Each structure stands twice: as structure tokens, then as C-alpha cells.
Length: 246
Image 1 (tube, rainbow, N blue to C red):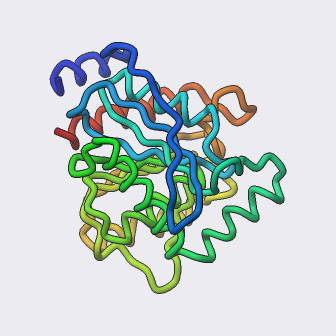
Image 2: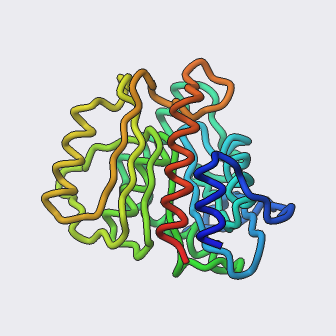
């Protein structure tokens, strides 16, 4: 399947493995309710843990999950905010993300809770990659620093800063970063500091920038969407998955 996928992806196409039906999945972490989304085309499919941006788990993440399922991957789209919490106002989004930025142990617990839920659904967490968008990208790097034994950690226009007192010494998988050079929220200085840190600590990594791409350049239908950067980053991500997962 890897060779076939690689050939198709190099042509810029998406292979179909049937119409896997995704399901909304209620679960709990530390006694609190959350609602994720799980889709799997086959019982032995490699797993992708998908982490949402700062407006919570919405149709955007579900669409991306279904795109990945069509490529042959199981996907668990995590919920880090809680059942029914899908903030639309900027101040609410900042409040929910800020709470987790201030409580990194809670963030890690929620990510591990999502993985545990995926495992309970039969997903192969031993053959998995985590990926996230914006806030979700920052969360994925938090998971990488925690030492969670995944094969890869991928961030699309995500936060790149390393909190004080943390490093990547426990990271086990490869790190892949997609970043827009025109991003004013996460700067090229943040990008270069992360690159230096990963290099110093001997972490296998690849970091790609796209000229003219602002923050959130993959979000369909937004004024920040950049088709060229989205297409190129998705293609490289797809190749990364075939290289990394069994």
C-alpha cells in the first residue's frame, strides 16, 4: 500500500479505500465529558490523532479526518475543550486555549485521554502519528515533548514556542513543521528557535516554510487560505505518513 500511495500522491491525487463512516464519540477525561470524532477504513489501519485549532472540533477537522480516512488511515479527532464547547468569539477562544497553555499537565492528560479513547475503539496507537492545526499544532508539540511514543508529530501553522523548563529530550518520533513565512502570530524567529532546539537535541525533523502564506493558510474558505501552500503541505504530509507508518 505504501508504494501505491506514494505514486498516487506524487501525482497530486487521493486514493480511495471505500466510504468509511465516521462517528461522533463521547468520552471522559478525569471525569469530564468530551466529544471527539472517529473514522477508520479498516481494523489494522495506522492511526492519526488529529488536534483542532482554537475554535474547537468543528466541520473543518471532520473534513480533514475524512480525507485521511479515504487515504487508508484511521483518525481520532480529539476534543480538548469539552462537549459542546465550540467557541466562536475571539475572547472565548483565547480563554479556552489560554487555560490549557497555563496548565500543560491538563493539556497532556487530554491528549493521552484521546489516545486512550482511540485505543478503546480498536485503533493502533502503536502505529500512530499526531497532527494539529494552529493551537492543535502547539498541543502536538506538547505531546512530543512529553515523551509519548508516537512515530511522528506534525504541525500546520501551529505555535512553535517551547515553554520554560521544557525541551525535546524525551521526543521519540520525527517532527514535521509546516509554517507560513507571512505568519505574524508565529514568527520566523519562533521557527528558527525551534529548528535550533531540535537540531541541538538530535531530534529527526523537517521544517518547511511557504512564502506569502499567513497564519491558518490551510483553512478552507477563509481569507487566509492559500491554495498553493495547502496543496504542497498536504502532499508532503501524505508522503510523510507513507514513510513513517507501517
